[in-house]
Length: 325
Image 1 (cartoon, rainbow, N blue to C red):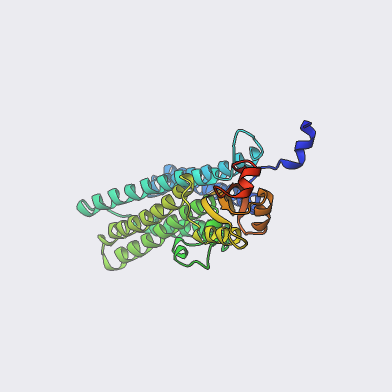
Image 2 (tube, rainbow, N blue to C red):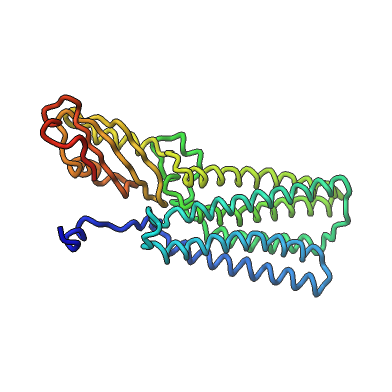
């Protein structure tokens, strides 16, 4: 067989999310916004001698760093999408970036908790006149960033896993979600800071500021854990879409005496799943017939089918022991 004749049987392994280019642009826009805010706070703190400004600027730098990871992951995945070294493409690179960002988020939560407990034990003077406007500006920046990154279709909550009729979370772009969680976490910290600072100034409840910090730590730690669990499941090739597995089995077993003996299903990118199906049949058909049965299944982008005739069947004596494509 000539090499040219194989071209019609070959296919690409590009499993990027459908909004990959848009999400990449949004990530870079938020990096620029957070980076500008970070520089302004650090420079302003140095010029005006405000530790509050410098501290918040350094805090913003950790989120900016995580957002840079997300943006670079998009760029790298796009540039190497057709690199044959990546057996199933670069679609899972975003999940690797999300996992890394979630670890950064967990460290930020621990740092906030450590600092808050320290200030409960040994209270420090708070410059309310500087801190309150700073928290308000930080909240505005983070709300703008969250608006840029939010996407109702991509960012579905893990609790939908209990509902077999909702599979949007299996199509979620975890890289975008990680960036979104970072800015929302920062916005939540700003809201809690405003509550604590306002109460501290009006009611002299200085202790409420570190208490709000502890609450923020718990909220951010919970978000971080959910993100680690979701992205880690993809990196470990855990089958999470039971509904899709049932649909594949139903279609394969819809006719004759075909039975699925083994099914491997895993995510290779946002909205893309790969499947390896082994089946046993009394009257086996070519693998292309079974692949045709799976045509049009949403989220199923790469299919390999292996057919085994039943032992002792007449067709087994006329053909090979198994067929695969």
